[in-house]
Figure 1 (cartoon, one colour):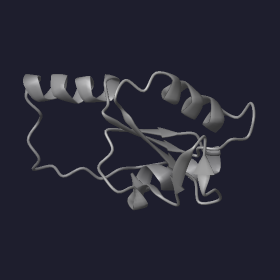
Figure 2 (tube, helix red, strand yellow; figure 1 turned 90 degrees about the vertical axis):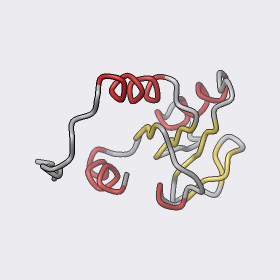
Figure 3 (cartoon, one colour; figure 1 turned 120 degrees about the vertical axis):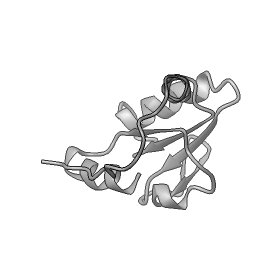
Length: 105
């Protein structure tokens, strides 16, 4: 079971802040695909391909420690290696690795 610690003193977001967070999630300017690959019929390949088809000014980062490149994008070994902040992380790694990837995000 995954548990996340949240500070109890942190104020709840205002209504406006909640809308901003939702807007960022549905219209991100930067997206990281963790588990990006070129392996045909894989989820990581499909997600990257679909994002590139309709990038609409988004910057897309591929994250995969086993690859240098995926679909013409440089692959970063970890999310921490991505050179700028990421609005949305799409995790397409095996289930066993997902908890550690979430923690890293």
